[in-house]
Amino acid sequence: MHHRIPVSLVLVSAILLGACGSGGASGPPEPSDSGVEGRTFLSTGLEGRPLVAGSTVRLTFQAGQIGANAGCNSMGGPYRIEGDRLIADELATTEMACEPALMEQDRWLAELLGRATITLDGDTLTMENSTVRLTLVDREVADPDRPLLGTRWVVDGLISGGAVSSVPAGVIAALAFSDGRADVEAGCNSGGGTVEVTDTTLAFGPIGLTKMACAPEAMAVEGAVVAVLSGTVAYTIDAGALTLTAGGTGLMLRAAP
Image (cartoon, rainbow, N blue to C red; front, side, top):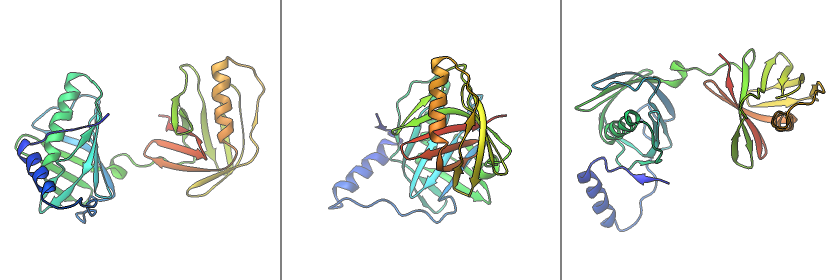
């Protein structure tokens, strides 16, 4: 469920009045040419307020929409940049209940995004209003994509029919790729096979595994993993997350420390 955040009652009223007098619906905003469009930024510093321990502010600018997360709810909506001002005053948000400090962090971030002074210097983005100054760095610099080869990727999500289920506690499945080979920990048994790697696909040869019998939950994970590792599979890497998709099935994996 989503709801509107009233960043400013005056601003919201002006938006509604403008919509009533426009005579028709406007199309989606054009992507900004300010340098932030198509990029994701992660927080590296905050003045005026403490950042909740263990949390990170993540901002994504894509196709005229801004997405934001500060450790609890996700926000999103259209944005525009006028001079040195970021304006995103029609944000929608999820409605999870989190600890009070994170809920307050959501509140001030929504207020900041509503109308902030914004400066981009290379890979560093600074946003501020009268109460806070938030510094962020391009995600590709702050948290670069892990290499496919040489990283141990641990399965933490099973994709089926558009839904994602978690891996049961105590069951470990993982993949490791080297030159022309995939080593597989499938949840119960282990083994591997050949793989051809391109920038966007993995073409698996037959996967050979040991033949142990394990608990039902481990065997279920193994069946889901092996089903994905067949033929040509699409993959994407975003920082420490690897996603494999093959039709309506797939795997979500994270880079092991």
